[in-house]
Length: 267
Image 1 (tube, rainbow, N blue to C red):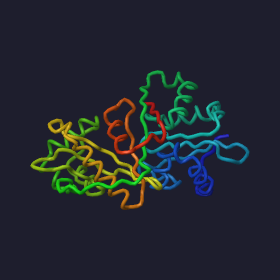
Image 2: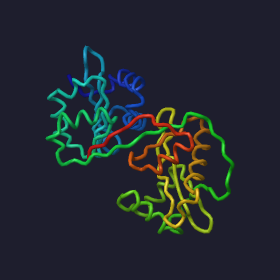
Image 3: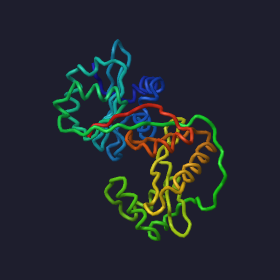
Image 4: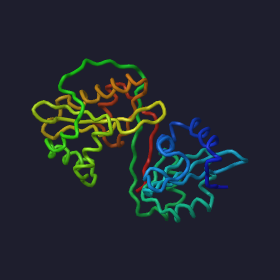
């Protein structure tokens, strides 16, 4: 039985998330930001559903307002439920994400629904052991004014990550509202930022080195600063990386990051 959750189900939802943290990172992030009640004005908010077995949650579905589906389940019988197919057809998510094993099983079960979909695999990696690095004066906190001064660099970043170009004001807001780091000498060589906090984790994102300054250790210097900051906040460093990005994985492993869980995305 799949039911829609409400504020009366908060303790049951939190119990499931606590005991399945590795496989519910994205659901947990959304829940900690917006809570269980859907705020239609917030793209990260959405409707929560639970697969119930004998009064206990055995699976969670979160259909967000920006048409994503995050899922986690302990009981594969959830995939056999007609209600699940009805919900997917009702919400029509353009992106489905969860642990690789769970999303792959969904894909195999409903392959007709996803026949034209693209599959992507990525890793969540975590740094458990404490690290300490020397401070470098060319690693600085970004300022909103850097956007206009180094606009070509920021447009290069957006193009690299295959995102639609942000407006200048949105770029400034992103810098203003995040721990946003630059490797900057006479110009910006590289960047990185903390994009989310999830339970005991701070998630690193946006590590990027300009095409003119690669293979000089710039990304590593940015990463060191972010790790130092996260550990000063008594959190663990978390990051997501595409499975085929072997160079990035090699860099993260060099700094002690280990694979936490493999995720799959259907788009």
